[in-house]
Each structure stands twice: as structure tokens, then as C-alpha cells.
Amino acid sequence: VNNGGAIYLSGGTFNGNGGKIQNNESINGGALYVSDGTVNILASSIEKNKATSGHGGAVYIGGGTYEMNGGNILNNNAVLNGGGVYQESGIYTMSAGNINYNTATNGGGAYLNNAEFTLTGGSFSNNKATQNGGGFYVGDNSTVSLSNGTVAYNQATNGAGFYQTQSNNLTTTT
Image (cartoon, rainbow, N blue to C red; front, top):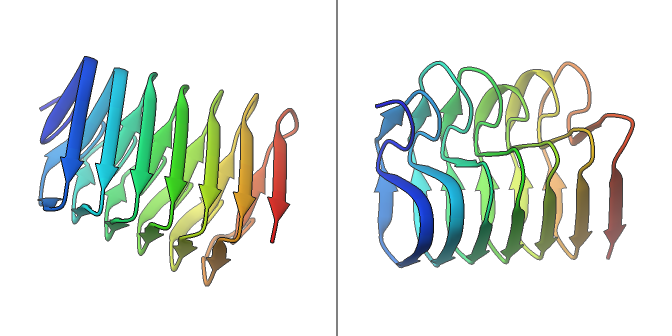
């Protein structure tokens, strides 16, 4: 499978309420590939998925809106970037969920480029990047806002919690 091991969304709405998406593989978006549309995840788990030669071990977001309330993105792997989440554009909003134990070359937890990412509560922990950004790789033209969340115990050669390139915004509040 080239994109979206379990789900490929190019418009419309996908609602996940409870349950698991696990053990899927594709080149990009091991579990879920979103090119456009709206994804709403409520108390669901996306676990043990793999981007076999590309980006987004669990989720690849190329556009649209992704909202996660509770739930987990755990133990996913991307050969390249974004072990948990790879976001090329679009809006990602996360409340009280966990993105933990994911691995990638860059952005073990999340790799963001031309993207908007908001975390309120929840955790980014124990993610690993072999190069940059164990928790977050924040690329060009990206905005990250964190409020009352935890970014801890991530590992990388550069920027265990955050690796940030030059033209973006990072805001944290507690």
C-alpha cells in the first residue's frame, strides 16, 4: 500500500470513537493518510503501525483538520520522518491524549512542516529520533502551541524534546 495502511481520506469526515487501529503498514501513513477532510479521534488508539519507506508511522497529514481528544498514538515507526505524526500542512489539535514510544529518523513523536499544531494537556513522552527532534521536529512555517502538556523523556542526537528550524513559532504555557 502506498498511502494509508488502514485508512486513506481525501475528503469528507472520518470519526473514530474508541477502538484501535493497529499493525498496519504502508509507504506513508502506516495507519492513516489524510490528504484533505476532517478526522475526529475520541479515546481511540493508533498503535504498532509503520511507514515502511516514508513518513508518518501512525498518521500522515497532507491537509485538512485532525482533532484528537484523549486516546493514544503509541509504538509506531517511520523509516524517515514523523514516527507518530507527520504533518505537511493542515491543523492538528490534541487534547488530553498521548503520543508516546514512537520512532523515526527525524521527529520521533511528530514532524511538522507548514503546519499548525496545538496540544492542550496530554503527553509527548519516550519518543526517539535517530537524528533531530525526539519529541517534535518543528520545520519551516509551522506554529506549535502547548498548554498544560508534558514533553519528557524523549531522545535524539539534536533536540530531545524539540528541534526547531528558523522560520516558525513555538509557544508554551503552563
